[in-house]
Image 1: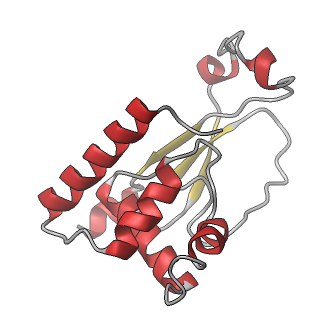
Image 2: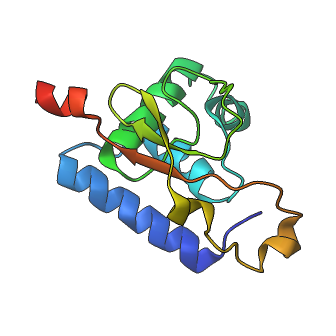
Image 3: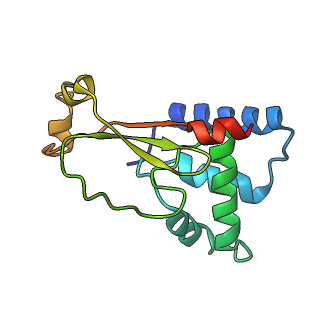
Length: 148
């Protein structure tokens, strides 16, 4: 679903400000990748973004799209919805949640009644039928913190 013009304008302003704070140039590639990501709420992956942009920018490689997206994650203007090293699977079918380290990608199970008892918003019925909810907490694990 496409975002409103106001929301897109705000996202683009935040993008420009973040790159400026980091002392980075707003290159055509960075601008195109972010704009493609910011214009919709569909959470596209790197391959989908590359597929949409390669007609306008034939020299844009998939590697550049990936590196650009990870730069945006590091700058805090984009969240990754997957794991650092690809898809993971979990054989633990008991109710639980996860802590994901933003540096190394380590995943830890969290058992928390407060998370289990979260009330889901009524608006979910407009999207579909919720069958399960899991909380994902992102941060830096103790091992990575000790390396600083």
